[in-house]
Image (cartoon, rainbow over all chains, first blue to last red; front, side):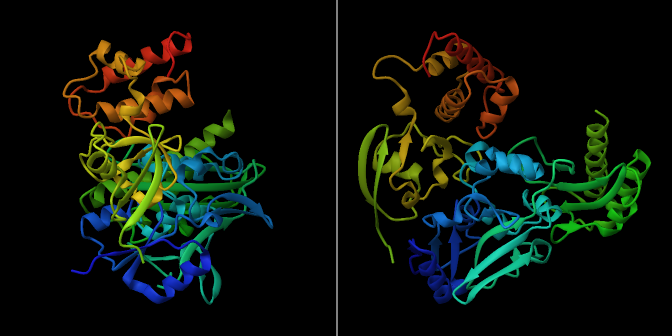
Length: 287
Length: 163
């Protein structure tokens, strides 16, 4: 068996050239909290590993042209601790706080969560509700893909084999925007989601002006729920409408039974998490 | 193309230079190349935290750090936390509370607790739990571990001990 090559490019152009050469025979290594496990379990057996951790330009959070941009190498810890994210995308910080353990959050990256493409990925439902775009780089240039068009199936994305996930961008949320993120797992920490939910609600006075709800781990990819969102639009948020939206959400999801959970539990918890999330917004508004 | 990687880093305050295969984990480097076996490897998947070390001021699972990514790093292990004579206040606290049974998880917990108290000198019980969520103990049931950390935090907050 040929030995796995370990490549550690020192620049973005070098990295993109390597990706062009190696394509599907190589896997990208950032924090390693998913890839190294997959390699040890022989789930993934690349001929080469391209370690991108030296590409400091891919690390960090900034505001540019009215967008918040997060580089692919930004760790979950960094996002949790960022005052920028706390101000303008608090649900993303909260979701990152739920990733693994502190040890994992200090190493795992946003780009890795996207690249791993698990429908249970903690950052993904919030990124959907933020209507984020994923930045992809290759030797032939750059493109931006809306996050809700990025995933095609569990573990699969539209990223080409010669492309690198460079980061995401989204419009910052105003302080008046309400949001939630919920996750249920086997335990309160260090757990993969059985069901996750995120929501962002824009209000005009008492009326819901725009509504974005996303679910994780209950379909082949994270999904938005336009039908459930529609039931809330243009009206005040009430417990009755929340129950209606949450019930509809549980009918719109298509979970499977796997090692973590079963269909019935996931459908039930979809309703519960959406309900809890929307009710937390009601409570926040009441106080 | 890299078959062997020459790494330079600081471990417990000392400069270390070593050539290893690039997929060697930091945990393996510490244990097998340097004989620092205080750091344990149990799950080898970043779930149990027995391999926890402090790297560049943050706790990490050393089993998941490939050595090239520790290039130039400042790494502290349980051996570096233990003073030349006697014990670190957290080690004392663990022993006094009976928070050590088989002891296998203990170095990892101590490293997580050291890092917590260095970042947050007055943690709440929930903050302690969040800080040690990445460390698994199969023996104690965690209550005494939490109490030991609380006791030590209190003593440190009063200025009685240094973390």
